[in-house]
Length: 238
Image (cartoon, rainbow, N blue to C red; front, side, top):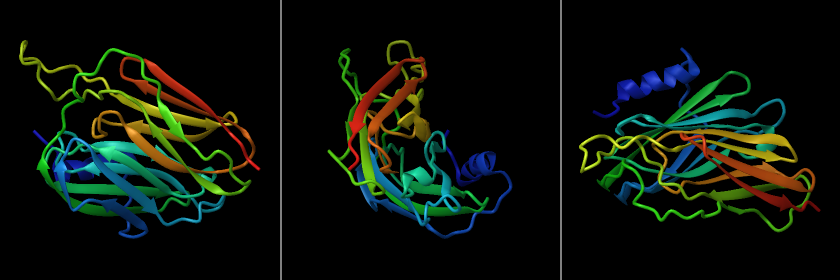
């Protein structure tokens, strides 16, 4: 079984209620054709001043042809400075990607983008060596106060989707994905992302922040087995 446009609309309604999203403000950057559906890069940008009075609260991503429609939800705020996120997703077949944005004033917006998949990929990552590989984070060496800068993250995890079958037992391999990604800056939460099996193995995510004061950025990933992965970097603000 797989998601359908109808089940995708139901998943959207579950998150935003009965609101009717407008087709505006959102741009989805995505390949027209992907040879390998197991890791497809995409970027979503929402037009917004990202001010205290007018900002993007959340961005929700869906795939209407995967086994499950949800890809992830990304909670933002004025501290992000720019409403843009980049991730890598896995897609089972040719389908539409749907992005929904919730604004601080209660408005909602929606965009759809079709992508053709040559080889699908919606299981889990390949067998990985049992070693502790630290997450990777990239931020500028220094940034001026008030500037908006990009944060790039990568964590090594097979993201077992719960869809694959063990060939020996003929039973489904239990799901174990990184389901939560939280970032704090000087102790203040600046990103809260809820991830779903639609994200690819070894998930990558990039987002933006406004430079305020020098201090620690703390990144925490949590998986279904309650195992956590952490990384801290110091940001120098001039």
